[in-house]
Image 1: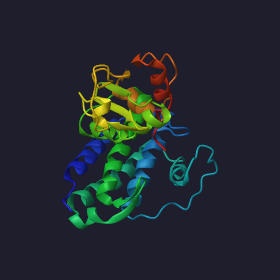
Image 2: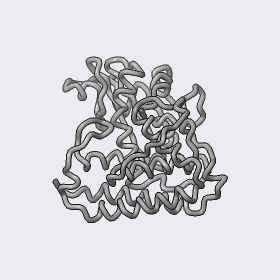
Image 3: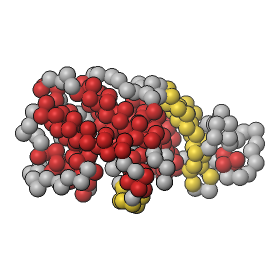
Image 4: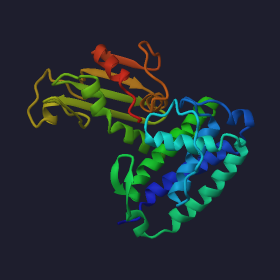
Length: 286
């Protein structure tokens, strides 16, 4: 297996940005609630600490949280025990622990041989290698950095490789959101225009009851291998077009915020009812 240098560089870049963000925080900022239910800024960093400790081979805490009301799955319960274990500490203490484990993990990631990244493991999306898991680690770290920045109104690191990587990961779920949740009819094309700071355009066509990404300039018939006509929906003449900025995209896709009709950050044209269904089902984070 080739060493996943690009993923390592992205992850370490996010860590550097987190360090710059968190170093000057006051205790009141550390205790600010985020949009993740029950989690403060400190709790968010505690989650990153415990994740990297586990990947470094450290045993989990034996502490058990008394309040699991926000937990939805076994991964969430594990996270909550680790976070609650650190809640009695100051933000500065958790940040110091983060710096220690991040330094160890940085050393491992930059010196380990190819076998380290090729080893098989279970990831949140199923069986894979540690290199596969790095795709998720980059996204997770960047999303949580943005969770902190959003509530503290400290914008930064909103574009670049990690941001593009993360939005690309979430875009893989757009066919499900458009087809299954939005119930896009056969022959339709939905265009999602992400306007910035991270600019991307996605086009999803539905044929035979299945939705899939298509290239810019393609039409619904082309996605299914057929021919197209003058009135066929396409990426240039979509059934529905939705525009939103990348910060809104991430907040909605991650379930940090939820769509409400009339949201001024989102514009729709064409089949607005279809657009409303799509945005209502936009959350894809478990």
